[in-house]
Length: 153
Image 1 (cartoon, rainbow, N blue to C red):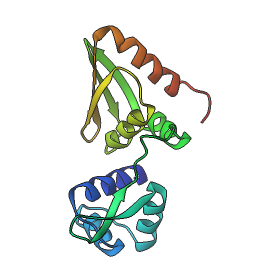
Image 2: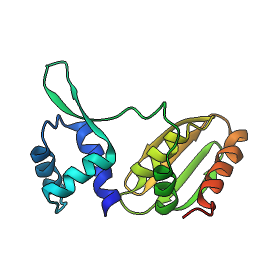
Image 3: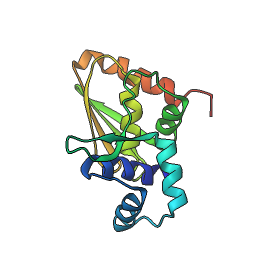
Image 4: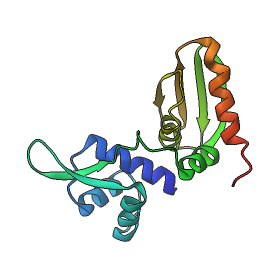
């Protein structure tokens, strides 16, 4: 539930100008999540959300830029715990995740910064990964296997 809720928070702040925790709390409740102010505060801290100033001069929550940081143990754990299966066809890879977790697993893949991944598209429990060339699919799936089969739990 936490991963699903945090994924929803990231979705909410991408599609709405969220200025306060109270506003985020209301939007989460409107989306069907039963949460408290303390839970929202903890999620903001865990997701490392920051308040940035928009063009209009107002401050709103945004996700930090993590592209320059190495993948954290947290993202590896998210990917490992939410991925159910994957399959490839030509230059495409489809990953099945727990309900509501494809976005979080997709973020984990994005932070891996694997060569040859053109992009990822995530739904609720399914992710599509586009690889630049069919020849490079084994490289990508090998990286997934390494993460999924790592002994560190």
